[in-house]
Length: 543
Ligand code: VG1
Ligand code: CO
Image: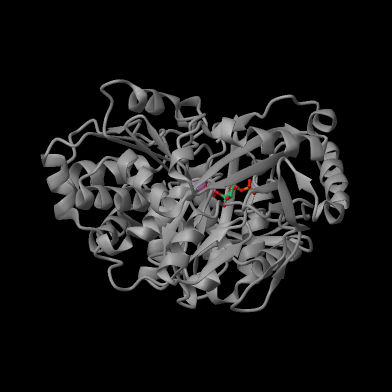
């Protein structure tokens, strides 16, 4: 057993995207590909030397091998200690909990989140800093720069560490502690929510279904919902993490969680349904025959926060990503709280959370969370809803409709055009951006354009500027059309079209979403020449 220095040459595609480095499994399995990126992280974050690193992932194909490689490299790079989840498993929010609770210098999370897994699927890795959150842009850029000049990496020759049970090991002078992936997370949830009230809800016959989609939240949901909260066994379905997620996209939305949706929409379906994604940071909330948009979910969480013990009396501001609907803004306005609009990606919430400016944050992409960690948190959102339901004793539909009556409804949809030609996508964005200045002041689809620009964000805490964060067209009546290219896809380009329309009149709040938004959708397609330029006449996924 010895320390080895291995010569390597850089790869030119290791710039992290919206959420870490995400590539196909076959790309990641190329010799030195993973190693180069990990070495670039270790070289860029000197505090890790002699410090503690958290390691774990969502259990997808290549998770275990990658864990073992990271452990060997950690030892060769002088990391003092590694906390690794049993079987190499950790949900993204649980990794954030561990980094914060044990005050480690950071963590490496292995996941491609909602992207499909298996040998032909995707893999990913991201570095989270000592606050428990995704590395900010300045750091991901520094890691990328380092990856381009690497000539070698360091690795300790050592057999695999047994990860199947908790225990203490060493490689060289580096301590490896294999820990239970669920316990610390579950304890924090017990501190935040009224578990007694939720237990009573289940005793009263409340019926719930949680779809873990054969991804990482299975073990967490079994422990928290069925063991600690007493929900009947069988409440959690597809609870066993599988390397290929059972062949499905572990993406909790109406398009991919089809069986759950069918059950919730059936005549005698459960009162409440929820699902989470590959790495456990996303959530979908369903009532009986009712879908809660993620944008509405954030607004409702904020509006009902006083019902939840962990937040009562201490709610500060809220932040949402730019394409997320303005539903939360309305609540913030009424409550007199600060409200921020950030670029897409959780890393942009970190500074606001650290500075104590916001309590809650969320994205339209089925993500919400609070200042309890620095990641989005799927099960946290589910427990928040359970706590609200236990307190209010109303159905999900009643609660949401009452909310709309009070604050107005933001009709909202996102249309994704996946794996389109990269050059065509870039051409579309360029063509569109050139038109934006001329649109302002025009009346289109019955409303006047108030602004049209390429969103740029100045972080209110550290003043850093992030440009090119999406093209937006805003109307005087509050409607918006937004176009963005995804930063998490691995094939070609994915174009996301986000459409929103505000409706204050309760008599107009019960329309079908796609119908209510049809004129704006049509306008969005025309302005971008979308069918002609992409060759698509339908989106791949509508959420
Ligand atoms: C998507 C979502 C974004 C989210 C990101 C990571 O990014 O739109 O809101 O933060 O995924 O989520 P993009 O660049 O493809 O639009 V996760 O759960 O995949 O880590
Ligand atoms: Co995710």
